[in-house]
Image (cartoon, rainbow, N blue to C red; front, side, top):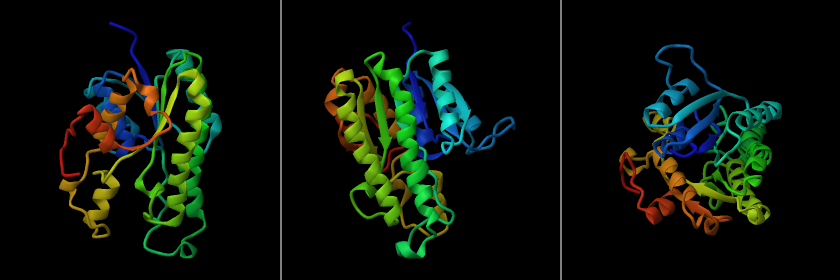
Length: 265
């Protein structure tokens, strides 16, 4: 058996981040993942890093939960140092961490939202991607191998939710394109990846409260994102995808990856 590949997923106590960790686990990765919700219960409470760790292990990977606040750069550096010390490599970085404003910023003009929604959506959700990538990239550059995936959304290309949300996602897309240019000579890829409608806990809660009109059967599972990332990461032609802005559906269709909870996309 060869050396186990290593992935790091940010913001994985729930939603797309958890799905990404699970999909990579199916491919046999050791997955470090971050979150701010923790549980000491056995079994652990849902929507915590311990619950994700249990799920990752059940899907065949090795889960390493990290309680971490991405507003604190020192904590991020400490995580990278741990990965270097324990594994000496990082094959896949999935930037997914995001802070949903409370209350969510939607249904109003930008001037009607608290200015703090900018820090929520463009702080952790944009700056956090940059910091994590900048600190983790040396692990890939040194080995001349690796993939950085910025989880985005169609909000980077069209209006979704709010102006601050769109700016954050557009920045995520552009960051991936520009990082790809700077990483090209080091044989490290960077790409932006947008799930379609996804059955995350947040979306399902919004549907149940009547705040969002969506048939769950028409949405993707979060784990499809992880499966798509695992597929592209192992492609010998990975670098041909670098710098691109893709949807999960496009990548899944290209590799024939199936949704474990199929709906209509």
